[in-house]
Length: 432
Image 1 (cartoon, one colour):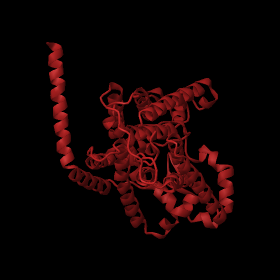
Image 2: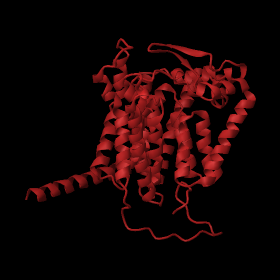
Image 3: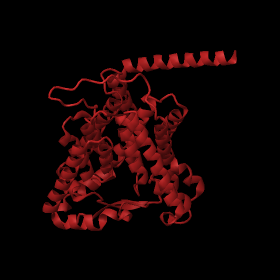
Image 4: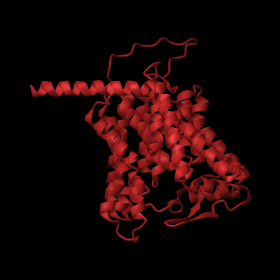
């Protein structure tokens, strides 16, 4: 009897959840408009200084006159100076910002970043549901409405960071463009502006998009060559020494850094990369990512492949600030709508992502950290919760790895297109 009652209660909860989902889907546009209006009101009521946008605007002109990597924007503690840390090509692209009034630059940059959010959500859902239907549009609008209240997205908006724009370039290029040159060029363009999106090249390789990968290499080389011609001194300096200098980016030990190295540095000390524990942890993370990638490829899950490579890149990068983790949004979409959304591990990962990003846990920990008398041993009550994004990413990779079996009826083979070209996925990669 108890088992029957439990099943009945679960069925009622599922029916209520579906009813709530249908009600929200019918009002997706209103939800997005209301969320954006509320964001604008909160941004006006408590304006945040977009420090990264200030760096782009004030330092980019030095790419032509020299000293791009010598000048800094002076702020205040805990990070009193902010240098330009991107490749010279990024400074060339950002040059127009220097000619805009400061207020206009802020408004245009944040408007463009907000417009990039539905590109990311719609692209992620299109990878998950390549066929028409599935309420892709409504779900994309609902996720875009939720996005400004997730900490990585909100932090990117507040700081005037470029992450959302680069994410839209990568996802938009991979999903909405059929031409291989555009898909590869989109990944290369994002990586030429900021190195972290280069991990998107693993997606092209994993999905066997060899021509797109070749175009990515060619486009990246062309961007570097253009910057070399226009700013040879800055290019030589960046690619020879500065590209591997993490000290210019910021303190690796700070809770702002949500990479695997940052988490282990806070837990084990600054010499963690010289210990066997670091290499063991790196090997375990790589093994989990390999398992997730293999499982996603076996079940023909392009969104799972993209989420896997992006989360892995954030984990193994020496510095992954919390605003770099905008890829939590596609990860949450996979966990909420993917084929294994009802599994306990998927639900656990989704709840933890929602709690950590919705409650803005990392900024709260940052506020505590900034009041500490550091350097010194990092306090463990702050170090353990400071691993939250690493834990979320690992749970997501494990959920991806466990979802190895293809669900649902087998797909019928699609006819070959006119001209003898085989059908392709939504991202343009060949079907097996």
